[in-house]
Image (cartoon, rainbow, N blue to C red; front, side):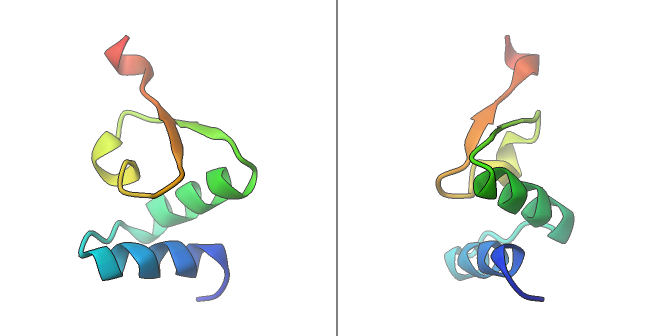
Length: 59
């Protein structure tokens, strides 16, 4: 594994809160393009530093 996904996984692993590979790919992509990630999975994605989240289910 290389690149942003690997970095995201490594940082979360060091914090003791790893997320799945697919979630790390999604989070990394959103970070790279500076996008807001719309998700109902706040538990995993809120652990990714700098990731902008929005939950349309809580509106």
